Length: 510
Image 1: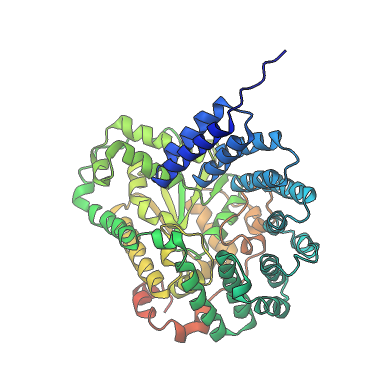
Image 2: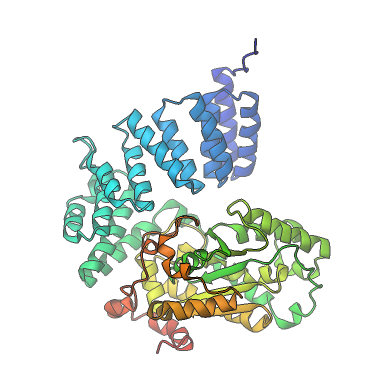
């Protein structure tokens, strides 16, 4: 007879969770996760420890571990709707959307009053482009929930995507801010109104909502915790470091064991997701959807060199080879690829890190997605972003414009310093005007043959699911409605045009 697994006492569980929280409060999330994992492994059938570990892993950005322990928790409590809903969120975190859909559907079936599971199920249907089903899920809510702000905002988003703009606007204006309990939902409301009023042509009202949304977004605790001066200073310091005389003293870089990745960068909302999805439709290209592969590689570099990137100049062969391997190990967490395929690494926030990456991969190619700088800034103002070191500047027009100037100045510096690295610029407006010709030139740059599938990228079901802010736009053919939108808001953007004017001229827009 199999011996039952040991169970801790309630006081032991309480003490374990208290110690874990102590690590978190000290900013030692990594230590907290490892401590709780070690304790949970002693008691693998204790539901509370397993559940808390899964949630902490998700919070710490460890999706595979979150999913692993979420599955164990669901096995221990298969009829617990909250646990199944959590499992769905872990599947969504790992981009396994169909599995997430099944979990949310089961969670809602277990408890039809679970408003979070209902919202999650509707949201995942939307990401899977099942708009009718997404709306049906919301409208099937119990009568006492149908006017809940959370569901009203979700329903308005779906109505907007179905082009029922007046109905969507009316439903949102009926929701008073003071009746919305969660501050995050108030933010959702205004960002949705921004999109609706823009499509209705009410541009002054749209900009009023942009300003309200900015105040709400910047008031979030995680936004206030980001040190803007430190972030900008880090980028400026990279620019100071990367000079011809310093680069000339680099030790030789060994040839990597695998073909180098292709980076896709640009300012947020410039069309990086669009070009990424177009290229992924080619049978010889595999991509990842804005994963932290490059940022994690920078951390690996710092583990060897310390926080000062200047030490990469003297790296010996074995360290560079190890870092090259570390990059591919990071990429393999998110994509299945072989050496006969091109690995596409798209992340608009990777521009500052191109220099260190070229140190590891001197022949690395980079695709630079351009769009009218004024449109980039405006579109960033209109989009609700998660808070991070890149997005912290995107809710305010002047901050976004100065951030644009900083990162593109550094990019220009890289292009001058590394003539042997391949840089290819493509303008969003040119891509929209003549997609076949622009994509043909781009494939030639990548040394790939033409394939008609790239023109039908929106039909591609085999590539990575889009989870960035552009997921709704890339599930349809290329369209022109987003071009030169900034002209509708020119009077509201007068203060930023002088900042962006040099780039407007450089990229041939005026």
